[in-house]
View (tube, rainbow, N blue to C red):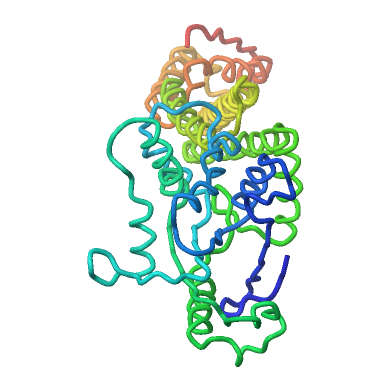
Length: 404
């Protein structure tokens, strides 16, 4: 690993990771290649694959490990009902760009007698054969996977940097002793990497920092070893992101609480829940037993209950404030004994009905409006006044309030 300030992008760091080559006979176990290949893909934003000579079937077969990526790196928790191209797009959003560097390249870049670029040479090498059969399938499989997983494909060719015995001392040679065309090819390669390599980001657009890269490396290595740690972390984050999505959607309605009907709240909840589940399905990882999905549904139910309670509380507050506001005049008359006289009951009934009518026609009271009776507040006020002694005749006034 080399870690240096990025030559062209301020406040960014260029991190170079060098892994073992594929097909190293000293390692003995081919599974190691697949695991190293997968780890490199997970950690990088640009994946550089080196080969010697030309792009031929042998060099492509060494990339057989790319065919195992869908098994080792599963993006979704369950098979999608969407088309295969949608799954391909999901991989391309997650995986790095692919750069193929061909060393000691001696072929003339042309096709059917016309010159071609290095990229055209690569794309032509990745073309699929038509037909069926084992040989056709073996030929097409690595090509399909390279096209399937990586969102962009770039090719660079390099001639030998020096010739003859100097190759043995290549690392000690100064740049002015290297072949000029080779130096030019290297400059084109490094310029492309500097200008086109993107910041490493995770799902959701989170840019990877140095500290995060360290944590990710440990996580991915443990996940490759155990097959479960990555799923736990990814699914835990998927649940949190899903809940955040649900809350954000519900808060759009909560800012307008209270709702006039329970149905309005339930319809909005269903819509937010549906969108949230799409977020979870796109980010969850190997939740084959739906353990995390079950936890998510429990959390969503709890959140739904919280929003419902908040909606009711907001409605109750508005209703009580409205009753207090509307009954202020009635309360004042009760305290002054305005109804403690002949015909007082009729006057009180009329005043009360006006209050009730105005209350019922005032909009925006919410779902608790029908259950909050004016009677309770009126009775409380009247009880305060029923034993008030009428200053004029010394009588006691008791008024019975019934109905609404």
